[in-house]
Image: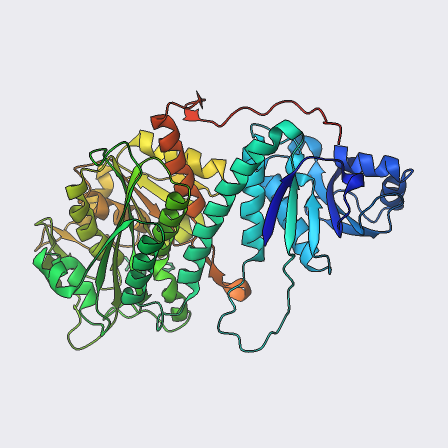
Length: 521
Ligand code: BES
Ligand code: MN
Ligand code: ZN
């Protein structure tokens, strides 16, 4: 789909569909009002008949609106004007795109992007409109040989900005939105691919292609190199599978120089998690192809960051393997020595994510990182705690946790700060090794984070447990692309701070929105 930015009046758009908002109860937005006036009250009449009350997410398509130059007008319900915030804005955009795909309109001009949304500027409005639109249009159908429910994708969407002087900001927002969307698409595609295709080596190939396309550095370590590094914990997980493990390192040099300390992102890349000898129940096991969504999201964030040419040094690290049962697989009770030298008693082979991540965390010390963020579908317990709404966030630095929460808030990809207190560390005690890899049933997502924290002592570290947010189950099963938006926003914020950009309310902000006032045409 092609995007455009434009400022101009809705009644003058010669296009298949013009999209305008209507607040509850039937209050017209600026664009809807202009159409109402030129049509001698046509829109108002329709609303008075009662088919559309402005409920958030409702839509109504009108044909033949008098004197308007477009073929159709889509009214989109925005809910109550005083409750209209970022979340409502995204919902309205999503509803308008879903409704648009139900029509045969190939092109549309949307005036939702010029609505006032508190605390957000033109750049953000356009960025979010592009992200939500492409998210709503995403389909994973490469294995469908027949087209079942044909959904048309409109060819072109023009996003309106209030004034001509906003065009440049709109274009900037669009580029950001597209970069984020490309990262999310990569994350979704990788997540949705089945385990027989998306193997550790497949992920490595994807990383190589990313590096080639964006002139970045890539290094792929195989079994022998991983063994030479002393990653016994990682290799214990990989051992039961016929798929060879891969350790992927991607580097983007956008900082002032090569000495600038990088942001390091680490993603859990279990391409299938059967549980190993501690085998999972059969029901729903197919969903464990999504156990590499952490890897997919850091690769997606990398893609977005290089496309945006973010001015910072970035390292992405992915330990990847399958977790399978086999005669030679690691067994409950086995003890391994991690790369850090600490020994681990593997009491449950299904708690494998932390076993591959701990060695990756030790490995990244060599980069002298400014900060390390790992992303993992780590625990079912996190889904119990936070459901599918918030990502679980853990950190050894409260300030870092705050920045990540704020980044997620900014883009509607929320995370919730959870504790990593010493009291919980007790639960990882092992009679025979330095620690066990499980902490018992209570506080499962916290003890998992506590385990990781023991390998993150030498740098500022945060851990994102995305077990509940990386994919949807049920009839809409599929990867969500989260937390790519959060990660990219966090990276952008860091870059902004480094560049000395405007910082307000403790975090950087792009330029403040100007107050509404219309441009002639
Ligand atoms: N990949 C799973 C976590 C998971 C489970 C994500 C369900 C999404 C939905 C992870 O490897 C795992 O199996 N964790 C165990 C840990 C337990 C054995 C301590 C879990 O959550 O049950
Ligand atoms: Mn597991
Ligand atoms: Zn797992």
